[in-house]
Image (tube, rainbow, N blue to C red; front, side, top):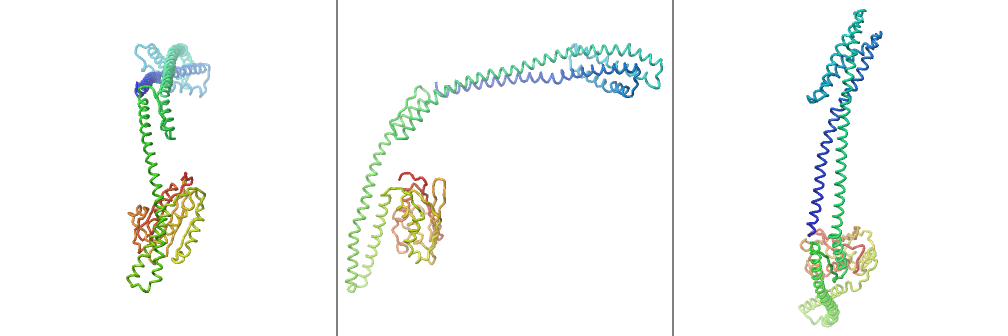
Length: 504
């Protein structure tokens, strides 16, 4: 069975369980909410009203008894008036609301109806009782009549009302217990559903985890381990993944890739060895050719000098002009050979050392002291860092860039060169800026190619090797070199040197 099918099935079952839990919880929670609302809106208010009525009824009976016994305090009279006109009226209205919410055949509705009738009668007889004790009408006959009303009517009503309240209290208390038990049962059901589905979910999660561990994680670990060994050069590493799932197919593809990679690497190694051999031969050729060319060039220069010295008076103007051309060509050839030798020698000694760039620049400026004075050049330099690299090559790099700024100056403008450095987390960013003639953007890449010149040799001397040497040195230090420039606005050469230089 495919891994994706197993995972889809497992997660599908988990989703179904979660959906069932949500639906069941919603249904039971809705019932619990309904039960709770009934308790809060019907049962508890009814119990509170009945308790309050029972308390008021006892208080009223006590006040009327005291009045019969001669308590004629204003507070007592006012309290009786408040109970009759306010509290009993409020109770009567609340009882009517409770009766309205009950079905017609309900026993509680019948009891409430009788209780409301008794309450109405109690209010009427209490008002009549209180009027007979009015100070203006109070006499022996009225007092006797009040006693009759109290003993025959009010006392009977009080007893009847207490009985109704007791019955209703008992019924509502039973209802309260019933609804409370139902609410507790609903909450317990919710808790049980959460517990059961949670346990099922945990069990399923464990099964999925085991499945992923053995079906996915272990093969992936094998792939990772094999890939790590291959990255370290062990191209013979192969893996074996059992089964007929996607990872087994991936393992087969990995083995096929490893086989192809091994064949490709073998071919590349052969090509690299061939390239190394050719490069070595080319370097040897350049060195030997450049070195051997110097001897006939020195001989030619010597004879040109002798001819110029011994036979100058015998030569006409054309001969002297031709001799001058030959001498200039030999000097250019000598410079070109020297630059070729310098280019071929770069990196011959690959000994990485600590190099103080401040010392390098100071020595270059000392070597160029005469040309700096002759051109009235000014050179500004930051405090430069100490780096890891090839000392001779780094000196040649800065020397060529400074020479570039001194050579390609604008007419009637003294050269001004700025050497700056900016520290980055992993490397140093150097810049050498001049105020010379500048160049067009289209030549930015071309100037780093060997023997590429942008100007006529009569305008600016050079062989077109200087900047290619700079690029070769920066490349050896795993850095990058580039130009920012505009015509007649000078050039800025940027290059990077890494702080932790890898093996060159």
